[in-house]
Length: 341
Ligand SMILES: Cc1cc2nc3c(=O)[nH]c(=O)nc-3n(C[C@H](O)[C@H](O)[C@H](O)COP(=O)(O)OP(=O)(O)OC[C@H]3O[C@@H](n4cnc5c(N)ncnc54)[C@H](O)[C@@H]3O)c2cc1C
Figure 1 (tube, rainbow, N blue to C red):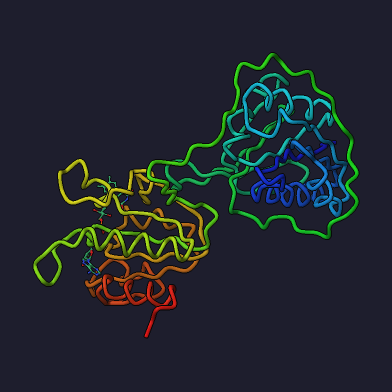
Figure 2 (spheres, rainbow, N blue to C red):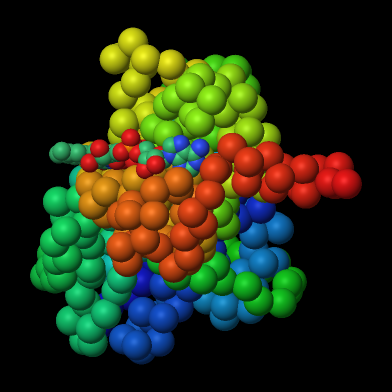
């Protein structure tokens, strides 16, 4: 019979991360379907808030805590995850695909003589577990099964609801761990260049900027600086995540006008990312297939384009505004700042 361990960790505020809570949801569903025992491992400097938040799961709670776990660090995190896995003795280990866990999971799996699969988006099957992931830029969906145990599954975030239950008395088993000698000291966090963190995976809205923002407009001029102000003004006011078309991010290397805060990390599409957001708004973007393929997991799609024959109008968006995005976004930003007359 299978037994399941969900690995979780807290953020800098000592609260469980959203991806951890989504993994708890997945663990509870799997445990219910397999009628298997469920344990949840907590990695935190202080596990009490997390244990209180998880009390309603009814799962066995195991915790590793202390100052050493306030910050991600390979040696301490790997040792902690290994100790949690050994204490739980689980055959199936579900973990969030956060940068913190993804960094150590393969090493921990190796230490336990286990196997690991990553980018899992769905779990089905009973009694045989079927784990689903995408390959080849979200074009091929594969269902994986394995007989080897323990089986580590790293779950991509955004595919299930985070666990939310009434807070309870924090009751957990403290697991002890012998830490290796620490060679890495975390001094602090450094902001990305220019303090602009424009990629926000947890945002409700994806705002995509296309190459039209830096093309000649109706007055025959390029308005790249105004474009930059409008785009940043909107994503900061709306808390949106910023995506881009390939044409726009490629312009820097082509010697054309650029928006300095965009990098290839912002690129959405076939050779870019496939983000998950409830809504998306494309602006000054044509909506060609290699770009829109990256919108596969965007719930509601809207676009603002001057071209009534763009790809968005040809069935790729739910709503298309045939309008000048400079004017529309200036108006929207005024509304958001409350300065609209
Ligand atoms: C192998 C391959 C892989 C690719 N991978 C990707 C990928 O991962 N991601 C990606 O994005 N592309 C990718 N592409 C490129 C893709 O095919 C398109 O060339 C690209 O997406 C076009 O970007 P765009 O729509 O921003 O620019 P354009 O095609 O130049 O469109 C600009 C649009 O802006 C509109 N516009 C201009 N001014 C305004 C205004 N004031 N208001 C409103 N609208 C305005 C114009 O009408 C036009 O429709 C790939 C191509 C290939 C061949």
